[in-house]
Amino acid sequence: MALQQKKRIFTKDEIITKEGDLSFDWYVLVKGRVGVYKGDLKMNEFSERGVIFGELSGLLARPRTATMRALEDSEVMVVESSIDEVIRNHPDIANKILISLAERLAKTTDEMWAIIEDKEIKK
Image (cartoon, rainbow, N blue to C red; front, side, top):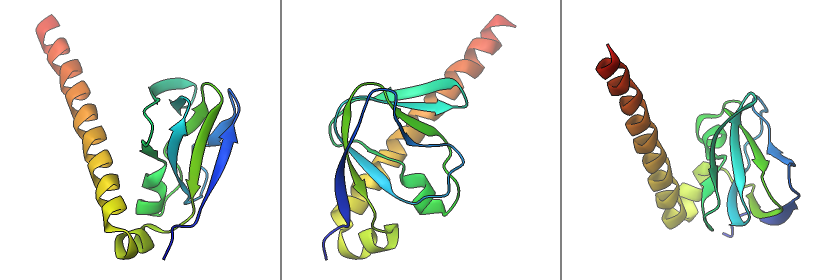
C-alpha cells in the first residue's frame, strides 16, 4: 500500500505547522530550509534533503510541540499516512523515522549536558 502523500511548496516565512495544532501529518524535506520555533525563539533549522519532521504529533497523538516555518521557498512531501500504517507496510521508512528521532534526542542530550557542564565550570 502506498503512502498517502502530496508535494507542497511553502514560500519564505510561511508556517508549515504551528505549535499546539492537533494535526498528524508529517513531512519530508525535498528542498529548501525549515526553521523550528518554540514561541518566538528559533531552536533549530535544517536543510538536508530527506529530513523527516513533524512526526512526533502522529507518534504521540498530541498537539504539535513546535512551529515549523519555511526560511526560504521550500518543497516538502506532506505524508498523511498514520505511523501504524507506516510500521505495518513500510518498515524501511519506520526505521528511518526512528533513527531520525534518536539522532535528534542524542543531539539535544549533548547540548543539554554542554550547558550543565558550562554552568558547573563557572561555579
